[in-house]
Length: 477
Ligand code: P5A
Ligand code: ZN
Image (spheres, rainbow, N blue to C red):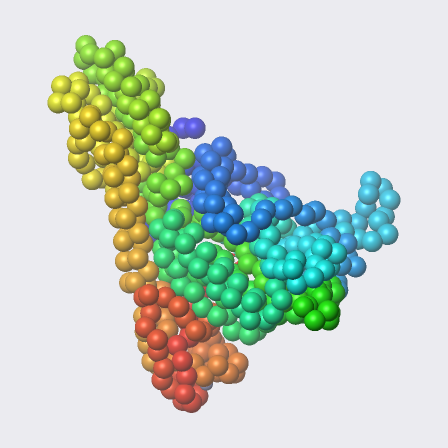
């Protein structure tokens, strides 16, 4: 792809920057002729694979991966009243097989409760079968009517990781909700993305759930992005789909369930949180290329420099590092630009002077320059990668910390939501939330906030003055 297209729009202009970066860094091609559907370029796909490998590794400790069909018969999808009410406007329907109308319309899964739970009905027999913890990573379809955006609001979610668990008691399911939140925290830690966990207001919970815990992060423009949700489903679906087990006394009991999901919004978060005016900045844990080697081949010692670069590549590759030598016949400056755009954490420069000094010059994606001795290079590079991750985490935490304000009044809230999110006391009543939302043109996102950046807060409700606790308020994507 042509790299000589002038500068990337500044990150200040977040939407323009984001769209242009997806193209320039070869993450996605947005020109597919269906709204809300996008194409992964190979580089974007490699990033996706690494990100989902992190997620898989965490899940595989105590979940099993499975795969259920894309198509859900209308008869199943319509069974749980709340669920279908929540999704009916977003479902794509398959109505024909060739030219013949189908007897039963088939939905493209907007999510897979109604594909998986009829099978759980068959699989769950006794308390000894529980708990069940399955997940799948699939595409799902939602006819979104809000403004679609690559990786953020899709009509085909290509990378929907959904986990579905079954338990003997409500309390067991609640414990699983806690486990899932911990798992998502660990996942986002591995991506250096700070998160804010909160309980969504009742009217904003997942259709068919007892309650929903959401994972949000703060985008560069101060708006929040919901990057994961964990739902306690109670026994709503087990009653609908008749998922029962025989307890130790030989009696039939309804099971309790949870489900939790993450989409490629996690990749949108990585790109948006860490990127800068020069392009992507990727955490080493998921960067498709962790180290780019640029041979500096001016002068007579070209062959010697190329040989040294190849040897370094081999040695780093053997140490399990994702490394590439860039030996293209273009200026080193053009190579720097190219790898910076693609977020490569470390650039190694190898020239005659480095060879003579028995060292390699290392420049991080954020511009820190140092030299690592050629002897023990693998260890030096691993240390530099770990250091780079730590810097990304610190930077991201700083961003989140400076975009949260604790406020007490509507006036303060109004100013705060222009810059980021705010926390304000709220009594829990719907009409007070409506009043707050209308006053400041932002949403009450959640309560029972769990975040190291936000202290517990109580005080008089900003709307009615009754006793309240901290509610997260912001504008979201
Ligand atoms: C949990 C998994 C569910 O669907 N069923 C199985 C539950 N929850 S959810 O909140 O509706 O979606 C889970 C997460 O997916 C992301 N998401 C989207 N990402 C991109 N485009 C969309 N149109 C879209 N819709 C939802 C959100 O991060 C959400 O938390
Ligand atoms: Zn109130």
